[in-house]
Image 1: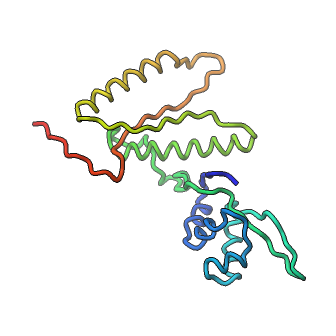
Image 2 (image 1 turned 90 degrees about the vertical axis):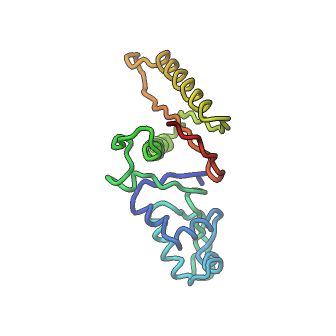
Image 3 (image 1 turned 60 degrees about the vertical axis):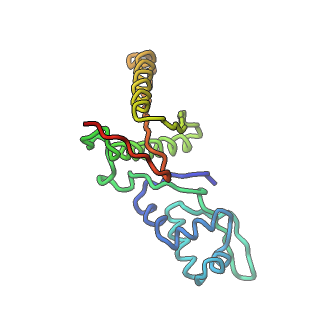
Length: 202
């Protein structure tokens, strides 16, 4: 079982977002039979089997064991991953695209960038898994409490200059075997905390 998987097929996304199927997926972090699931979720076994077939058709669950009881065969199913992310690619032409954002300082542009990361890395990760390789990635996640808006602006300026200098030092599109990498840096207020009002400038 994967720790996380990215769903980019619209039909698979629809299945995973169905409330009953989503509940069954959550219950299948450990292998279980339709009969066991029926008791847990309070549904008839036939209905559970119906939903399991839908999940299996989209690769979201898989059989791990078969048990025979008399003339009956009981299959134990398990989810394909412990958790899932639905890729914006599942929305097709409706997916967020940073290329369509007019304001590159807007929250909408940042969300479109994040959506592109999920879409692109999801595809690359699946290709790497299919070929038995690891995908080379770099992630930095930290939290900074700025004393003032002025210090936040100063930090932004220093960070921009540092990244520009590093990019200029290492970027060489003409080198033999050069492989482009996308770098995204984002900052936003930490959710769940009241944000102090900043004085307006006139």
